[in-house]
Each structure stands twice: as C-alpha cells, then as structure tokens.
Image 1 (cartoon, rainbow, N blue to C red):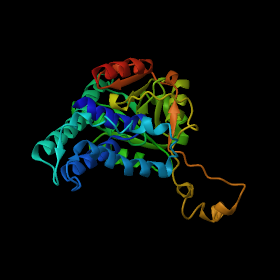
Image 2: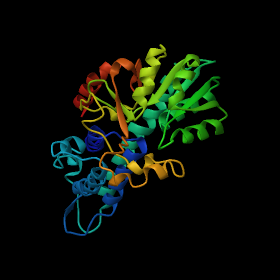
Image 3: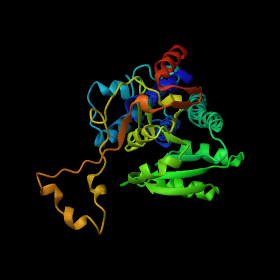
Image 4: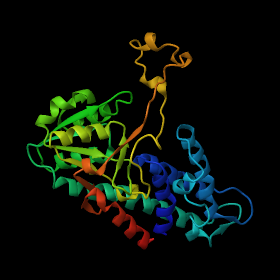
Length: 325
C-alpha cells in the first residue's frame, strides 16, 4: 500500500517542487474525498485520486505552464495509481473497510515520508552542528527550522544568520521561530551575504526537490547563496527528504519554473510611482521567478532520512525506491 501512495504523491513532487505542507494538503484532500465519495452506484474508491488530482493540476497550471508530456511526471497516468484499492468498491457512501484502508494509507504515507523523515534528518544534522558554530540559513524551511531548534534543545550552542530576500521575505518567519526558541540570530538581506560569510562556519539550506542530475531546486536565491559560499570555502549542507527526489533533469531555472505575481516586486510607497502603469510599457517586463537550480558542485552534502549522501547519489536512491515499489 505504501508503494501506491509513493507513486501517487511522489509523482506530485517529481513534476513540481513543493514544501512539506503543500504535499500534505493534497494527501488529506484525497483522504477526505475517499471518506465521502460521490453517490453513483459501485463507485470505485481508486477513482478518488483522479478527482483530487484534477483541481490540483489545474491550480498549478495557473502559474506554471504544463506541457502535455509533463502531466505524466506530475501525477503519472491515472490508471493503476490507486491500484491497491482496486478491489474496494462502494455503493452510495464509503464502506468502513474502504474508508479505513484509504485513511490508513494516507496517514502512513505522511507520517513515514514527511514526519518521521524530518525527525531522522534532524538527528543526522545534529552530528554536523558543533558548539560555537555560526550557521547561515536562507528563507524559511520548516525542516531546517526544526533541525536548528532540536539542536538547541539538545544543548548545542550556536548562532544563526538568517538571510532573506524580497518580495516574499520568508526569512522573517524563520527569525521569529528561532528567536522564540532562544537562539541567537542575526538578520540580513541577501545583498549583504558577502559581508557576513567570513564569520560563517556552515550553510544549512532546505530544498523543494532534488533532481536526478544532483541539482537542487529551491527558493530563488539559493544558488546565489551556494555560489558565494563556495567562493569563501564555506560548506553548504542541504536538508531534503527522499520523497522529494525525482527523475527529472534540469540545469537552469528558465526551461521550467513557476512565475509569481510581478506586482509583488513593486515596493508600496517607494517604487510604486516609478513603476505605475508598467504593463502598458512594452519595453519593460517584471520577472518574478519562484525557484532556482543549484548545481551539485556547489553542494557539499545532502542530509536525508536515509543518511548523509552526496548529490551524485540521487540516481541510486531513486533506483532503490523503484525496486521497493
């Protein structure tokens, strides 16, 4: 049954990069749909996945143009994705057996691939954090935040430099959580990283996806952090669950990416006057990319729920996962 859930939601990550919360949401949507299926007679429970996938694919397509061949990477072919539930048919309302099996599968997948994976990564990363470290983080990664908080609770004494960037300013969420836990922090914008890196002992980053060629897809600006860190000989560590490993290969951020609202780049009250009516100016275009791709040579180590591995080991992990399924 775990293989079925791996195929269903692993395909989501393989087609697009996602945060843990964004992967859990469609899983629980499928769970809710399976608990209350439509009334047609002898409704096959495995069709719930198709019904849940459709609105999610449409929602992602608003900001991310999806080519026909990419739909297979996104969710895979509908047939067989819920094959483990093929023998369970319901009439009118879901039977207790069908509901229990579906809910158990989804709960087990989320717990094993996301929650327990985060716990394992936190323990592995603890070995890489020493007393007196100055750790640089970027943006907001729930996995990185948990790792740092767990290390602090276990007695490690370190300081964190939180790097942030516009327009999302997600680093503020990281800063609030770490300060709330009593961790000493410094907050800087990404334009100032060259000034703080001389005192940094290691860089700890999150990932939205780890591609088959070892490249790390994460929030835009991550590759800049890794590049400057390499110039200062500061090790770059990436925390990533293995469910985010995918068979896609991408070497740049332009072939496939997500476009955010370009108006977010305009600072209210400052740049608003100069950029007012920019859409009517044919010579001006505002590009607000969401992700970038960091080449594997800029990453020293990937900390996963299976242990600490180099980026080049992604194909091996994918091969093992395929055999298990």
